Image 1 (cartoon, protein in one colour):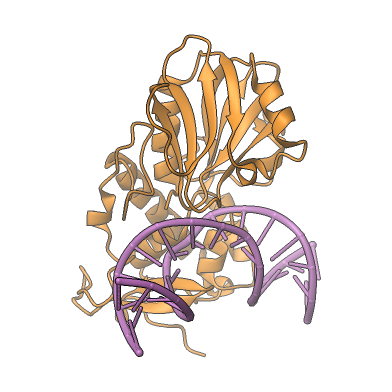
Image 2: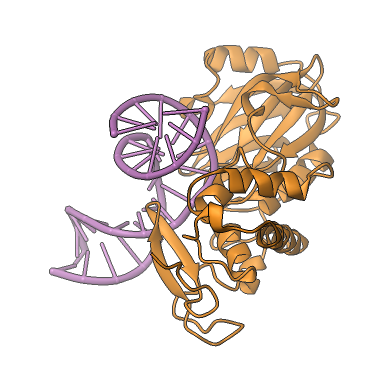
Length: 286
DNA sequence: GTTACGACCTGCGAGC
DNA sequence: TGCTCGCAGGTCGTAA
């Protein structure tokens, strides 16, 4: 499941293999993959044809190919999206959704997505101030902890301004971006916080500790090529990361906590799961 | 305005 | 063997 480190690995691959190339042909093989492009597949493919990719950029879990003329192809990988750089004669993947071919006849770019939660959209780049150009469709997404301009205290204040549980706030991409279920659980474990703790009970110091932990764990994951549980997350060359071997909480139900030895528990959370240590991360009273 | 929750979607594994 | 069901989970729209 791609979160920030996994998306960053993909972005680096796109920058290396796609930037500087000009699109010769775009092909949409499944309409749901471009459902957020309201003008439809014909508009998407026509506007992409002849466009030059200037750079690959990212904010949180969104990435985009910056094109000339202040346009961008915005991508979200959802749960199972992959950006693959493949030879043109390679067999199509079963879940190939969108294909871009380039005028240098080199490897093509494929958007493959089994569960179709991800997608692409062609969007205009908008100046949101401070000389920051963002695709308009993701202007509401907050800076992520790997952003050089990320401000820890601003993010902590945003989390504390909500009246909800701390993990719900952590997953809210308008407060701090890039954190998904896996790294939320890992950051909470490192900060010894239960996911259901109310945000108003979060002190400034504990908030800083929590977001620093999130940043640390995501940097560590990035260093190992990301977290993979199956073949759903791969880099542009189709290779998986191996940070899942370093996880302390997520998916560790029943296994001893690496700090105190208590068995990690799994609790239902927002129609999914939350993993925590019952001793290190006691449930808040009430 | 803010928060909570269901829908979207497909493949896999468990249970019968 | 084959069927059903639950689970995985990020984002968005809608309801409260």
